Image 1 (cartoon, rainbow, N blue to C red):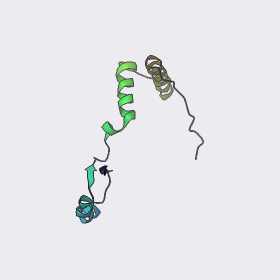
Image 2 (cartoon, helix red, strand yellow):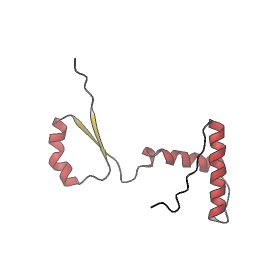
Image 3 (cartoon, rainbow, N blue to C red):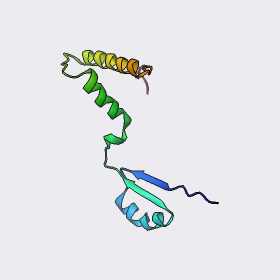
Image 4 (cartoon, rainbow, N blue to C red):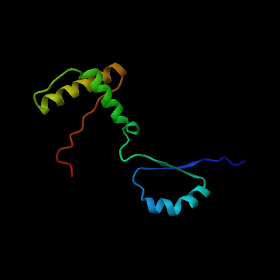
Length: 97
């Protein structure tokens, strides 16, 4: 018994000439092609989280500085994590190369 597992190629920056040359070959191999726009926020989970954060935690607020914004984003992330039973961890990326 054979189980067929479809193979997917999801791309957002494929060279059109290469795709045109290889399409028939890939199709014959059972490869399904999906083309995404250059940026697809619906496929990026952080975008959904950011949308909820803006709508539920930061709505109607104005910030005087980047540090004030960062503070309130941090508070919002912690509040969302607490409500949904998730822990929030911070990573300092400054100085990393």
